[in-house]
Image 1 (cartoon, rainbow, N blue to C red):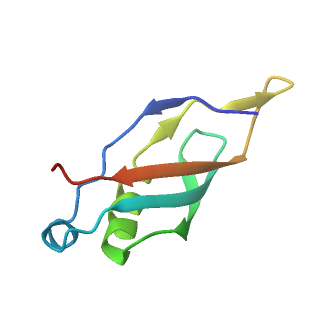
Image 2 (tube, rainbow, N blue to C red; image 1 turned 90 degrees about the horizontal axis):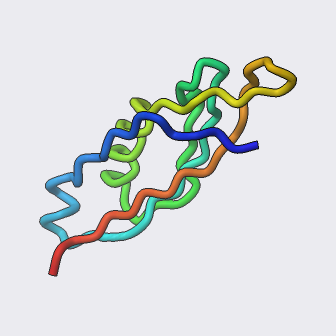
Length: 88
């Protein structure tokens, strides 16, 4: 079952990572709680700790429509991918 993202806050590209030319994709796994907020969030892959922190801060503010099973909201686990790319 898939929930729909209804509020997305873009992460802030950390100045230290930007200055160092660090790019890449941060992969997260999060539990979407019954109220549509992010519960536990785990970084499963990241090129840099600063990018991980920026991603965690953003995803904590995201909101999803609750997933319903037999008309009742349930918790679900979902994967989140955040790409960080510097303009040429």
